[in-house]
Structures are given as C-alpha cells and as structure tokens.
Image 1 (cartoon, rainbow over the protein chains, first blue to last red):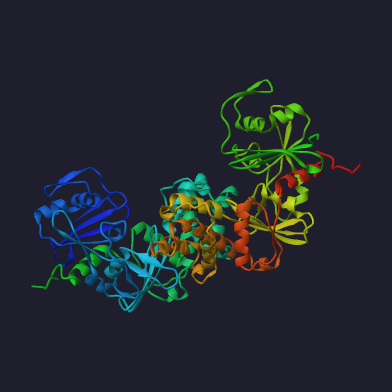
Image 2 (image 1 turned 90 degrees about the vertical axis):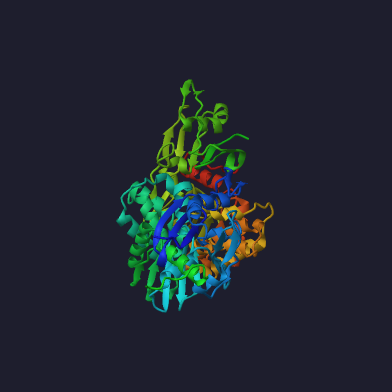
Length: 319
Length: 319
C-alpha cells in the first residue's frame, strides 16, 4: 500500500515515527530513543552534506529510508520538537483554541533533504497560572471524533494533562507533575531506600494510597502524606514490595483530588500508555468518576487529521 | 570550667557534639559530617581494640579527646542514632507523651571505652497515618520552658515537623517532606534545568510562591502548582535566578496551608537553622499566622534537661 504521510511524535526523550497509508492507516511505525534531549551527535552524510545537526541526524534515522523510497511524502510532527529547545520554535496558540484549526497554523522547517517538516504548535493557557502543552493538543484532536460536546481528556504521564474540551475547543487545562515526581522520589528520596521493586501490580497497596489521598489526612496535602510511604513501612503495615505501588496510588489520588469539582459529571477519556491508563482508570473508579473510557492511537489520528486540514494530503474518497 | 555532660545530636547526615558545663552552658561544640548514613570506615585502635565499627569510630572522633580528659563524663544522644539503622535501637514512645518523662526512658549502649551512651527514644503517633520523629522530641523539650499551656512548634528541615504541645505533652504532630522535595526537584527534575542559583534571597519570587500556594490555583495541590515554576519561566514572568526561591516559597506555602485550622490562634515557635526559620517566619506572616517566635539552642537545652531528669548529672544549685 502506498504511503501518504510521515507523522512524527517527537518529544523530550523519544521520537515515534509513523508511515501512514490511505485514511491514515498505520503501515509501519518506529520508536527511537532520539527525543530532543537525546539527539545523535555522530556526523553523517545526508543529501550530500556532512551533517552534524542533531535534529537532521535524528530525522534521517527515523524516516530517511521512507523518504528515499517516496521523496515527495509530506511530513508532520508534534511535540517538544516545536519548543524553544526544539528544531524550530512553533509559537504557542492561546486557549480557547479549536484543535482542528491548528492545521492552519503549522510551522515549517526545511530539512537538508529539502523536505518541509510541518510542526504542530503547542497550546498555552494564560488565565491564572500559565500552562503549556506540546503534543497533547494533537492527541486531543485524535480522540475527539464521535464524542459529545463536553468532555474531559486525561493524558497521564511524566507531566499529566487534564484537558477540558467544549465543542472541539480546548477551554482549559491543568498539568500535574505526578509521573516525574514518582520517578525522582523513588530514585532520589528517602522513600526509595525502603522500596523494593515488584513485577506484580500490588493492587491493595495502590488502592490504599488512593484512599489516603482522598482521606482527611490527604487534605494536609501530598507534602505531608508522602511521609506515610515511609512510616507505614516502619510500622510493617506496608511491605517493601508494596511501597512503590502505594506511592503510585497516593500520587495519582492527589492528582485526581485536584481535578475541578465538575469533572465527576463529564465523560472522561484517557490517552496514554496502557498500563498507566489502567492505573488511572482504577483510581478514577475509587474516586467516584463514573464515565471513563480509553482511547487508542490518538497521536497518529490527530497528526493525520491535521495534515488533512493543512492540505498536505487529500482525504480518501471511497471508490 | 569543668565539663558536666557530653551531648550528641546524631542525625542521618551530621553529628553535632556539645561539651556542656554547669547549668548546661556550652563549653565547646563540633559539627561533623558523620551522620549514621555517613560513618567512617577506616579501622583505628580505640581503647586497645582494633575497631572497624562505624559508630564507635564516629563517636571516638566526635568526643574521644573529651573523654580522655574526663573519662567519667556522662554521654547523652538524640536523633537517628537510636533508629533501627542506628547504633542501637531506642524504641519509640507513643503520643500523647510528656517530653520531660523521656528522661526516664533512655536507652543505653556501652561503647568500647566502657562509657554508656544514653539514647533518647523517638516518638510515634499511631492515630490515623503513622508519624515518627527522632531528635525533634528533644528540641521540643528544649524550647518548652516558659511557654504557655498550648503551643505549636515548627521544626523546618528536610522533613519538617509541626508538633502540638499541650501542657508539656506532645499530643499530635505532622511531617512534611518539604526540604527533601525542594532538594530533589532542584537537582533531578525538569524544574532544575531552568533554575539559576542566586546568592541573594529573591523576596518577591518567594512571596509569589507562597501566594500561589494559598490561591485558588493552589487548591489543586502541589503536584499541579509545581509546573508553574517552569511555565512562569517560559512566559518570562520569573527569571532563572528567581526560580529557586519561587519554588521554595511555593513548597513552604503548601506546607503551611496543610496545618490544622486552629494553628492560626496558637503561639508558634520555630526551631532550626536561622536562614530556613527566616523563610518560614516570612511565609507564616504572609499566611496570617500572628504569634511566631524563634528558639535558640533547642537541642543542647533539651539534652541537658533529659540528662538531669535521668539523674546523669545534678542540676547546679546556686552557691
């Protein structure tokens, strides 16, 4: 099947490349550890030029052979590649923003191969504390089809986003540093010292963490409840193998307790890695959120739709 | 002046040794980086024995010469030295606990020099989430003299404690991992990447952090507001040099927002390093806490009083 589009999900630590066929079907995909903070540095010849630019090198590694085979394939990219530290800065669009309209705001950078890379701009909210996203706006678009007028989209990760969408427009979003905090607490804090990794999910410990976050103790905030991951170990109420999942539940519980009050009545869509979404789905149920579903392939779909909106490709008309 | 007591404040990362004279006056003091997680390992001869035990080695380094000069000096110690990872475990006493009575519960370990080291037990609270302290109970005793019946004692640090004392008894306490979180966020998280250290205290940025913690945005919790230390940098509202003190104010603000509702009406005493206490005093004022004062020499005084209560020394009677 002939490819129609190269779609790149290019974040801080990883670069995912998709070769998409008619109607956006995924023909091939690659996952590379070539995020914008982990670019290659070994010089290489690209299109007859001795190249030392990390972005060019990573781009060539990700999809050079696809472009060799079909040099006129259009390329679209989302994520931190469009940040100030990225390949070329794609200025933020302010909320409220119609996500489909981002297709008219793609930012172009021309690669050494003379191929234009179309970068999706991120979104900024400047009401109250500023908040930013890059990449998530594309995932939001990718899951919107077929949903109701009002929806809350959760994108768990290092920096979890919760995005309120009203009739296709991002009206508000929040960021929680839950995933990064879990990682650095486990690796660098006193809590990590008594933790023992465990392959099997410790459901009881996870649920306990969520419940503590929701409890009266939890109202003192996460700075206070965190210490219980240590003290429950000291009192032998939590085995070392249970401590990581207790901490995970505790942090996710605090994140969910921080969602807006009206969130419980909205349909919620979760987008992200399946094991992490499963944790959030479990915690959401414990917190009394009723309407939760999971989305698949949000990034590929979003990039495809933006490429169509930008006129980079023609949507397939059925024969 | 003849020494009366050797008092050790022996924590996780440091060991402070005090030689105390009549009425507890400090004759000499030493600060060593020989906390229980940083013990010496080089073997040495102590009292005719080739010694490899880290606790013995650290003890000898801290006050071996004092004991050489006065072999019968009594020794008292508080802090993590009495934990399960310490020299010898001094079992916790449960709240509510009369802090002066801890003098009757000292735990003894005999050193190679045949000197008894009297270790102050820590305190555990087992109502709701368990909470523990080791060392702070001694500081609490050290500041109680002359205070009213009800007081709230704040001990800022890696793991800040807030201790409610009613008529000399610790009735309740909370722990906040504020200091450790500040350290690991600055060193290991994305927030550290845009921070620039600054010798001068950035008062405006600190105050802003406190205010954000107290604001409507702050109600979503620290997992959410943390990200503003980055986004306010992106929007150039916070210079790189302001970001560390903004983060400090933000975390301290969240800690204070987690104190019990009735805390505002109690006299508050702060115990700890002067620069850190100054930050807390400033933040407390911004949060509307009216009666705040600072205590000095809490540990030395507490250890002295416990040694007197234990009969290790005789309180001086005026001639």
